[in-house]
Length: 274
Image (tube, rainbow, N blue to C red; front, top):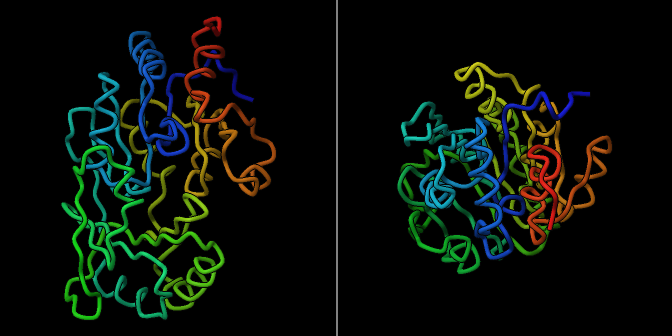
């Protein structure tokens, strides 16, 4: 096992991980990440969120952070330079949506500057304290350009999302893979896109490997990242099925308890917890 003293890189998911239940970074977490920066650690945030949305959040840390967004479809440097971008072809997305979709399910296409949706979902809007990445109401039956960064479905009924997952993959498994970032959130990306692949690109640029990284996550879009890191840590608030999927990984405190920051403070920065 990689010893924590060999860790040079800290990688964290956002929702359910670095962010508290109010979708914000706590003052304590901010202070810990500033200390990591001061001690020379490379910082990476890897999220399913769109980059415009995520950038506004990580700016509150006030330290340089690489951003992997849309589950790996975009990479931005700490100065917001786009380093990598991948979009799904319009025909691939159109085929994926050519299934029966329950009317309770919110459908979202991540575009470059807006997210196109079949319904305005206030719960999804609440994930942004400021609407830096705005929704655009569309009728998918009349939409011409289906090109997108990723496809996103949201529904409180997990069983309905499971059925939709099977239906979409029956049409599109050649091109797409899926992940449940939350039990209520189903996402589809190109098969080449994954957080771990994107993080490796960042680390190669900076002269590091995933073996020198500690990573934190709480969703199934974090599986490869957590598995490939020198030390992968699962949030206490993660679904039980994720913990069962990665039984060898340590489970830490919840995002409500500043689990990421407290682990870093204790195990990496050798600080006493208050």
